[in-house]
Structures are given as structure tokens and as C-alpha cells.
View (cartoon, rainbow, N blue to C red):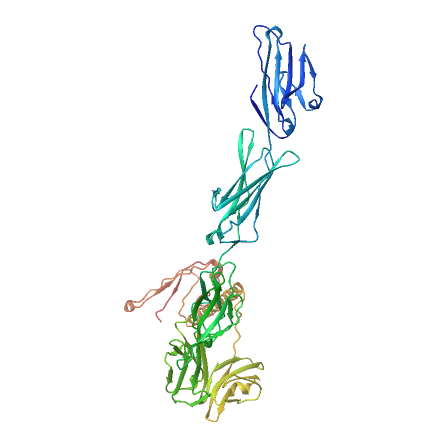
Length: 597
């Protein structure tokens, strides 16, 4: 029999009983007992091949197997006993052996309860950190404490107090309380506990969650910082002054501004209305510049802590342009402008005509000679602080140059149709503002844009209007200017999107007609020539078909031209003979024309 059989609570335990008898002998009986303290209780008796249960309380869950092994189902803590198997072999004697039954139960995962009241760094009394509890285990488990992953053991700075409680169920609840001295550095430390327990064949562990302990310590360092949108503080920014100490709980803060006194007097300190060491300055001005103090008292040492910071607000002010009033000049005059401003750092200047125009100059003064009407407009001075991004100001002044009207002609020739309504436009610029008149009556609409006038005339086209044209005249007290618009008849043309194939077909038909007319004219002329020669007797054509025309010897140098007819017999029948009679259709004789006369 094995010395020990291990089983988990609620599982099945099997205790074997193996024996041998010398020779060919057989057993006479087998007894199973369990020992409780010093007494034995028989469970089973086996004899003559029969099994006799002896203890009725075990009958329901204890079974004797065919190989005489004892099986216990749904083991409880009450089954933790020593079981004895006894075998009798008659005259050979009696033999027995025993097995101890061990039962195990895994505890519930450990719970940790932290000291929520907080712990001071003083170590006159070792403070309580947390308590770890492990419930319902068997046998009683063990608890180990860890700080930042390292185990803690009992010493002069660590105290471990453990208790073991046996529940009515027979299971054990174990608790352990950790007392440990802490320092400022332990505000980030993590604590946890681990329970170790036995199961059949192995030792197991289970860990609790990690906790952080609230630690109280005095303030040793104090800081005062400036929080702003950018490193360089500008007028109009929102600035926060933040005073902060490294103690826990945070100390009380007092924020002050140092006001320097004149005449050698000591500076004054103005108490500021700060909340928990935070002062918010909305839309700061240059007056907020200066030295700020943060003060705090350490109540343990009763010492005063102090921190200071210098706030510098960059500003740009007093921007002005001289002369300030709207400037009026005559054409050809000199324009002279000056720009000035004050700032916390060196300034840069830029002159532009209109805000988005090109840069005219980069000095405080701007000078333009021989101004014209086009020089009229808004002149802007832009001032910036190069060392402080985003800090700039601008101002502008309007300059008006006196000049007689200048007409910007939109068109000199307008193509029109008879009796249609035509819209004519005339644009003129001048200072003072010009007046536009038209040479004909019609519907007039005027639009003015800062010394510029746009006039539109709507009039019906007549033959008289096409002959005379239309004239617009712009006038102010300095003079007048006119522009004449001619009207021309519009020639109608085929639409660009017409049928190209149809046009080409019509053009081809026109060419064929012209060719036919030319051919008829040529035939008519040829017929007239032949008829004339025939009347003059120059064509001696007979009925014989072919006739030689000889030349006298005295006129051998004259030229005779032989003309052969390639016409068909039907066409040849149309030709007449020398005497004006028609040739028969079958006469295919060659023709000769005497060109001597």
C-alpha cells in the first residue's frame, strides 16, 4: 500500500491493497479499517468470496473494487484518516499495511485592502500599509508580501502580522497585515501579496492586484512657471502663472507681484487673487510685465519657501501716420508720408498701396514724386516686431490726386443690326468725381466707385445713329475728355455649328454649274468661228471625202494645218460642206482647213 494518497476536495480517492501468499495458497479473509486516534473501525469484511459492509456511514460513498482496492467518492475533510488493509491466510498467518489519505483545497484568490487614510514618511510608529486575505483553503496557505516585485521579510522597518482562522466548514482563512516604513520615493511604489498552497503533486501560488499607497511628505522645493501660447508673450495673449510645490498634500500658496518703488525706496509686494497657486491673466498688457513671487510655508519645519519668475510682455503701440487726414494732391505733386510706433523690441516697417499691394518701401518715410491719378488710393504702413512672431500692427491713409477725367474705352467699334437695342459702356476716372454725358438720348445707368464712374447707355439702332455714331464725355472742374464709338452693320455668317457636308455639296453643285456654262460658251465661240470661215469660203469641203490642198511653189513657206475629226458619225453629220449643205452621216472623209488666207 502507498504511504500517502493525495486528492482534491470533492474528487475520488482510490487506495489499493496489493498482497501475495506463498505457494499456491489463498487468503481466508480481508478486512478494511480506518484508524481514528487509537481506535479502529472496520469498513469491509471479505470471506468465502463475499463482501460484508461493516460501517454503514461509509456505505454510501465507499466501494470495494474487484481487486480489493478501496474507492472513496466525493472526498470530504472528514475522510482525512489512515486506512488499513488486513489479509488473513489461515495457517500462514495475517498481514496488514496502512495508507494516509491527504485532502487539499485551493483557496480563493487573495484580496488586498489598502490603508486609505494615507501614510506619513515619519517612522516613529511603523505605519500600516495594507492587509491581505486568503479564504477557504486546505491546508492553511502561506502569504508573502512584495514591494516593487521584491519580497518583504520581518525586520526593524517591516512588521508582518498573520492570523489563521478555521471556518466551520473545516477550511482555513489566512490574513496578513503589512507594516512598513516609507519615504518620499515610495509615492510611486507598488505593493502586492502572494498566497502559496499545496495541491496533489505540486505547490501553487496566486497573486493579488498591485496597489499604490498615499504618502504624505513635506514640501522641499517650490517652483513658479509661466504658461503661454508661445515662448515670447505678446499683448493680448492669455498667460497662466502656476505655483507648485513637491509636497503631499500640496501646501497653501500665496502669489504676489513686486512693484519697484522710485527714489531708493524698497519694492512693494502686491497680493494677487490666485486660486490654489494658479493665476490666469487674460489679454495681458505691457503693464503686467514685472517680477512675480510665490510663497509657501512648510508647517513641519515652519520654514518659508519662495520662488520667483520674470514676466515680459512684448507690445507694439502708438502707431500713427503723418499727415493723418485724407491727403489731396495735384497731378505732378510729391507724396510724402511718415510712419511711427513704439515697441518692446526693434521694429520693422513696410509701405504698401492697399493692404495686399506690392511693397513700396521699408523705411519709416515714404516719398513718391510726380503723382498721377493712378497714385490715388489707400497707403498702408505695416509695423512688426521681428523677434516676436505674430506681433504686428497696420494703419492706412487715403490719398486723392486731383486730375481731369481719363476715359478707359471699352470699345471703339460696335457691330450692330438695324432696329436692335444696343448697350454701350463708358468708364471714366477723375478727382473730383466726373460726370458722364452722352451725345444721343437713351436709357442711362451710372455706377460710382471712389472717383470712378461707369455709365451704360441703352439705345435703339437707326440709320441716322449708324452715320453719326455715339460720343461719351466725362467732365469735372479740371477739364473734360471724350470718346467716340462707331456703329457698323453686322454681317450675318453661317453659324459655326452648321452642316459641313451640306455646305460641301452645295459648293460642288456650284462648281459643276459654272463648268457647264463655260463649256457652252466655248462651243458657241467655236461654232461661230467655223461658221464665219465657211461664209468666207475658207473651208473648201466637198462630198468626196478627202481633198488635197496644194500650195503653189511661190508660197511653199506658208503653213497648212490638218485637222482630223474624231467625232462619231452622228456628230459628223452635223457639219456642213463648203456650199452650206450637210454631209451625209456615212461620210468619214478627213477635213482640211486652208489657213493661207
